[in-house]
Amino acid sequence: MIILETERLLFRQHVMADIDDYCTMEMDPEVRRYVGGRPRTREEAEDRFMGTLVPATDRLAMWATIYKPENKYIGRCGVYPHFNTDGNPISGEGSLGLYIVSTHWGWGLATEAGQAFIQFGFKELKLNRIVTSIDTRNDASVRVINKLGFELISTETGPRSFYHFAIFNPLEDLDL
Image 1 (cartoon, rainbow, N blue to C red):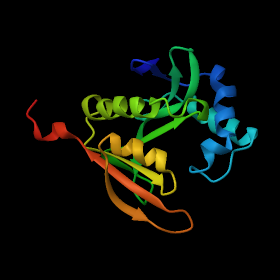
Image 2: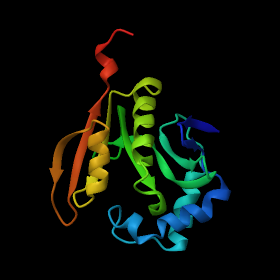
Image 3: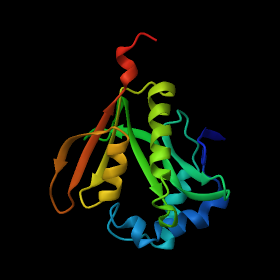
Image 4: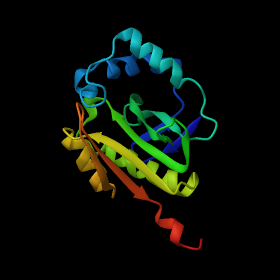
């Protein structure tokens, strides 16, 4: 099932044929350095991958990201549920995730995916707000999020420090 498409990207449900590329990405120290601190083992990556095979019922999920010119799996992107501190989803809110393989960094693909999922989240899913958190050392991701129009709402400091960003639905104030 194709959920969304852009000029260069296609977003769809993960399938078993994606497992090797998914695991390669999860085992890459460059991809994992800001999202967990260490690469996953093949076994950990496979376990995590199996959870992607459960179909999303409300389209609020992370999707297999395919680079159309190569017909190649290059990551997972999407808007997934935003949870409160008790672990419950917050109604009307989503979290943006953009994970692209390191071989395709610097091509503008995260920005392209982010633009598509912001529009999808606000227009199709009728979200009020989309949030994202980024490790404070991840300058490239901060640049992407700033380009997408997110605003910094707080900074969390600790053993791992994060910037917390949000963007609000501009359509809320319009009578459409």
